[in-house]
Image 1: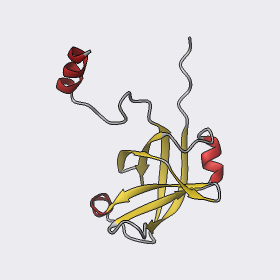
Image 2: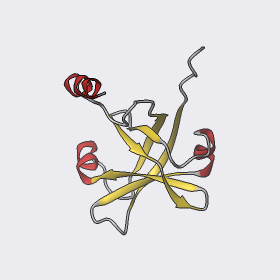
Image 3: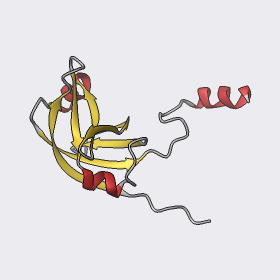
Amino acid sequence: MAKEKEIEIIYKSKIYKLEHLVGMHYFQVPPYIIDKLGSKFKMRLLCTINNKLTFQRGLVALGNGSGYISINMSRLKKLGLKFKDTVTISLKKDESEYGMTLSDELKELLEQDE
């Protein structure tokens, strides 16, 4: 069976503050982007900001068909970004088995545990 073509979606968003989590920020994922991703909120994504930093995150419902992806202060500092800055975001579905990068040692340990 042929492997499904990987979809990459690139768009711009501002950085917003999550009011209920101190020090946590987010960027919005508009409804048309969610539609392109398959119209689901329960999915893992690879997020790349300004072509500089890639990290794994989950998509969370924001309301009115929009979603958001959180980004912490550490990553913002690494990128030299702050609240209300505009960023270029690249999103791809995270097809990894565990939703994170695993070391070879941990993979081997998990295989032995089966």
